[in-house]
Length: 293
Length: 135
Image 1 (cartoon, chains in turn blue, yellow):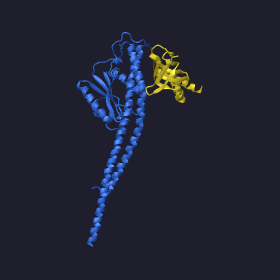
Image 2: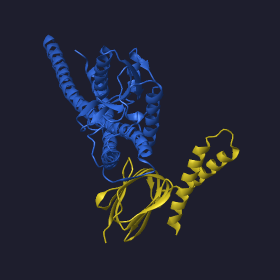
Image 3: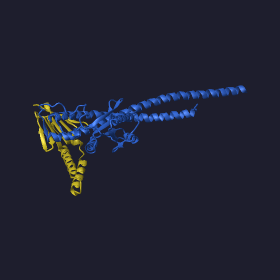
């Protein structure tokens, strides 16, 4: 049986831990509110952009030859894994990695070479453990999601797709459903087309495309728009990943704080029992001492 | 008179929505104006000042990199990477950026001229938009 002093020390340490988890929960809650607002604020642009792409494709009359739309057979693919930098967010990253392993294994069974590109410290540690080809790891991608960074990353991916022989580029990130629920998702980034709602750009041809003027030319605009679509997809994944991170951390730290309460309650009972036992023992000693006289 | 329903959107947020009589945007080869009843148009935008003429007055934005989408029913959507109101522009930073770009263009030793020119243009246009504030 641990001594009174031991139990007291342990109670103190649990209380300190609880202070930390509570503080982390509050910080995560504040960051989560901001990240959540950012996700919501980004939606109108995404929807309007989508509508514009559809109008453009319709105006082009269904035939839009672009290297970025070029579907080819998979021999070599690049999987980008977007993770958090820090832990303490429950199973967020490990769920993503578990699914990533499944994804990779399925591809490898089909004889496809899979290269990994980790974005985020956790993803970097994860890929270091596996013996895959790892490209250009990055950290702090989810720290402050910015469109500028998304554009830079998109240009990098497009370059790799066009010049380094990757037949497809996938992005694995955590889709944000709510503070309680985040779902790992693997989206095809390149070639563009499958990313939005599973539809391909090659829709049934409209005999007379709607009369839309396109400046400077449909070909040029489309090429740029497709690149921007890649950036948009990455930006959205960044926003959702950040919201997921803070949401998951908030939930994890909340349950950690509650668990600490439970542990404290049990230790207090133990402490009281031990104290009572000590008192009883002393009383017995006194009475038996008195009897001996 | 019919009015334009203008929304100015950036990837991060909605920069503004207006009912307007006219919109002037910096197209890639010069400014173009949109009035109610405009034909459907999708155009790439350059760097410059975006003007929205509303009944209350003229709203000015600095915009860079994006598209103008004029759809049916007088809907005008402006999708840009950057949209800043005059009050949000940091004049000192723009001036610094202009100086940097100018000095980079001056020494000409293997610098990315196109990039420096683009930076210069952005800085100058930012200053133009910011100058509206003092008027």
